[in-house]
Length: 134
Length: 84
Image 1 (cartoon, helix red, strand yellow):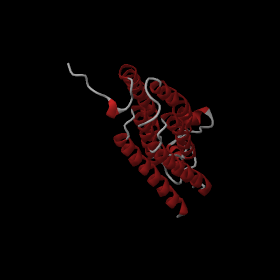
Image 2 (cartoon, chains in turn blue, cyan; image 1 turned 45 degrees about the horizontal axis):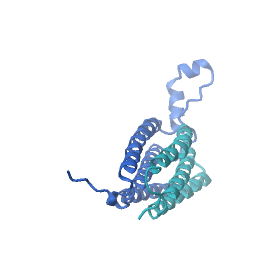
Image 3 (spheres, helix red, strand yellow; image 1 turned 45 degrees about the vertical axis):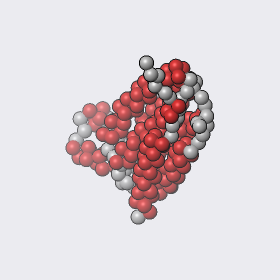
Image 4 (cartoon, helix red, strand yellow; image 1 turned 90 degrees about the horizontal axis):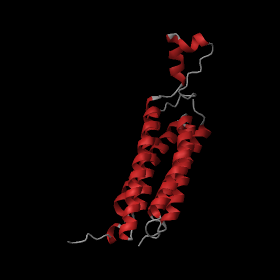
């Protein structure tokens, strides 16, 4: 009972974090602060995906313990069923490893764009940027 | 069954990450905001470790605390530090 309540509290806090970071991206004018809040949005979405793949009865990470070599390479279906009843779902974690790498590449690209804006226009505030008329 | 103390630690970390996010939104010094975002990433790493994803813990400590902060500091070098 109290475990489920705490789990829903964690899901609620992470969801509110996603909402607050989207609000900050829209409202704040500084470009680097928008990037900071974008990384926080990525982090919160990844943690939310891990929470979706979690079971409260799980006690083991999704790594098959094995034993002898034959047990590890050719496990019987009873052994696999017993393992899957005590471990968490590995699919969201695998997807998140991909998402971390893609988020890092995206952050490097946007940081270079922001750095060039700061060097060429001498400001990083969105509301102070002006388009030069020709 | 997951022990309650681990869930309590995770709930504390989630609430602290939420507080850090609100602090970042209303912080005028962007350098401080970058450092607080590193702390927030550390709290999320605690949540990942207690929800049985130790491989993501390793990746998050390296990327969230080290690389993201360094890249954002490089981007901040071009313009002004304070908002408004």
